[in-house]
Image 1 (cartoon, helix red, strand yellow):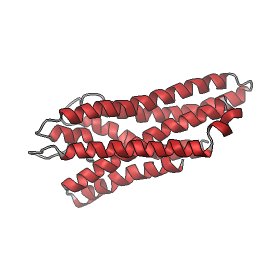
Image 2 (image 1 turned 135 degrees about the vertical axis):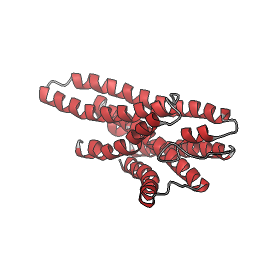
Image 3 (image 1 turned 180 degrees about the vertical axis):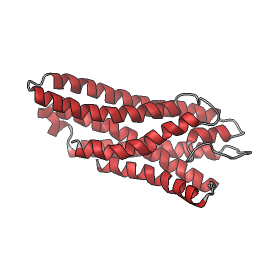
Image 4 (image 1 turned 45 degrees about the horizontal axis):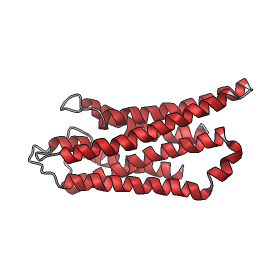
Length: 232
């Protein structure tokens, strides 16, 4: 939860202050260095959020489906390894994408149809070949989005089977209510992220991508504290 909170705060802090400054000053300029920095940190923290949701779903599956083995299976050493592995994977992913962007040429007009420097609109501005960038984006993003999403859905499937075996109707209703709130936020996060990174843009203006981006950069980080603390 501490790492999830850190990544949520980091995502919002990477995007919102610059956006508010642009709105307040009336200027919509961002330097090349600032843009790359925003791209790198957003990629790192958004991917971290993604992997942590999968790790937490796995933790919840073990706790509900195998409660007697939980202390042994999810010991502190294993939890540290899962979180540290998430940090290493996402850091590597963010650095690779940022370095691949630095090799591109931008001839202008350098107008990003977005409210922050995201990878997809940046690639659309490049006047040099983006074949390698798009290939890495499809392979890595596909793995980091689809893999954890399938892991979460599988975990919740087995959790649902365990809940159905609960004898008390009140306990069953309470457990389903909790899991439904978790799944609703997870589905909102993944459906919008997949729509942006794995589906072709609907139009050059990027209207759909901007709406989807608001969902996984602002809405889900706002809902996570409510779902994973107050609901629990």
